[in-house]
Image (cartoon, rainbow, N blue to C red):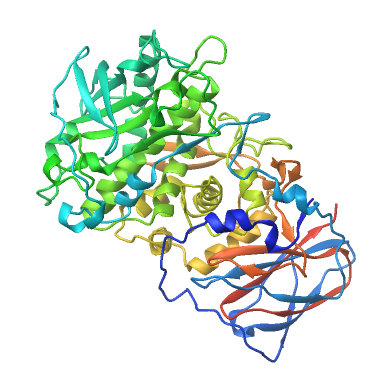
Length: 576
């Protein structure tokens, strides 16, 4: 186990975390520090929540019994801003294992564990598109300086295999493409386009072929009435990607009958000799839902469209298979971006509002989780799609290794400049899903009118639970530290030793257990903890984990002083 030292060991990542929301509500507070008279509080059991009424100064006592136990404090900052760290004076000083400062500083936080080696990182989405998806539908005059004139590309909506089309990929990039596949279902038609410079033979590192395109098409849409493809599985949870509306500057409701996917070399980084450390796998851009004359950024393809990287899609591990690491990841990306497309209609257009980015991204990450075993592609949990247990120790796959290292970052903060936020947001979403209703919970999150943390608390309430956002954060903290246990009650479960199932509209969605102590990040195993003397601050709407006692028996005592709005939870575990 590795213990975090001082906050200064993570200056780079904190500098990149940009706050993207302003939270107001009855369960969020405003923190400050002030002197106070301590209240005596006694606790027992594997976890204990110190009441808010105890105030900011607590003399805490916990009866540990005769079995040696490790003692942890979780500080939950319920404030909408960062506050100063808590002061802890414990009856014993825990044994700590500290990484040298230079080791912590040189961990490349922008790289993500993939398999047994550290490779280029695939990210999903683009900041401009996300910004447009985080606000209500807008007219050009409302965009201000972001509006840029653009040559309007002729739109050809009704197309057939072999047709040529020029697409706008952003305000500065056009892509010449040819339609390579068309699938007609009872509800919708899928049109797949491939950039001409990405079609085999080509000069890119990897080139798409007809067999590859056909394999991707089969994953997204299969003709017929069965619920056996991404389109059916995702729409059954979140609803349709388009339909009726009252905005005369958006594409008509009839556009819902076609979905287009454009494969091209995103960012033009797939040429021979290029070896980027980070690559964009795909993105959905709401600009295409606008009529060209009203497009906020000056361009629109006037259709339901998302973009997928052609070079990564064609990257083979020997002989190309859709189950190869990068193609399988791109299949998950199809589901991820499709949720974003649906989210824009269900939240932005229907309710004339816009989700904060972390809510939207959490929903897409959970979509990957729900569809992993259906797509035969390992999801963000990082365990084989057909293994519903918590997997094995030493796991470096998926999002959770990075979460363990940055577990004091708020899930409500999101920046596309770092993959840390994907990790933290997924970890929180995975907890919510496994305790408060699964896919049906996220259906309600996407379809309700709330745009911030209240989208979650409203959905949780609708599912029949009585929780505030603060209580959800507190219980999440307990679930993190006890994720190696399989006998916890609902509200604290990450790990039952098997799967979690939820059913929406007769389709069952399965997700696996999570044991955070099975994950390794650059040699560090399991969640990191602070030492009592090293807590420099508490990030807004986050948990800070502190190890305050090692192999303790009998009565454990500690004096704690916290900023206003910070809650204390105590967790005890048998010492290893």
